[in-house]
Amino acid sequence: MTAPHPATLDDDELLRQCSEVRTRRSGPGGQHRNKVETAIVLTHSPTGITAEANERRSQADNRRAALFRLRVNLALKFRTDRSPDTTPSNLWQSRCHGGRIAINPSHSDFPSLLAESLDRLAADDWDTAAAAEQLAVTPSQLAKFLKLEPRAFALLNTEREQRGLRPLR
Image (cartoon, rainbow, N blue to C red):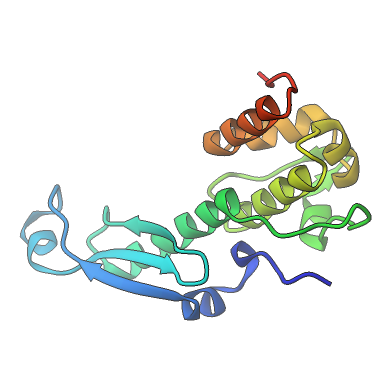
């Protein structure tokens, strides 16, 4: 069994693997924002992948936003090995019905699902039809899901072009 993707770890475990820097940022928010270190920068120590949030006046709100962004960045930039016979996770299966996947890109499950789909695509050499079959969704639904995060869709097309496959629209 392979280690879980870091994007799927619970908050406490993921934060244990991160360094956190609190800092000030300029911009809207008034004097409170300029005097207090409410901006949060998280760095995942094992991978060096970072995320930042500074749009809220609350440090706790910024930490939550940075953690979500870190999960998305990990999903985009870090791959875990998937064997060809790996079945979709329970989370993936719970979100799929009739060949369709349903999720809001701001939902806390989104980064885990994104990581799983990108890992599957990488394992299938970025062949969307093969990956979609393994994930029990249609190829168009997989593409539609990846379009929820434009950087994921761009990654898919970059990888496909490097392999001589046509890009998806």
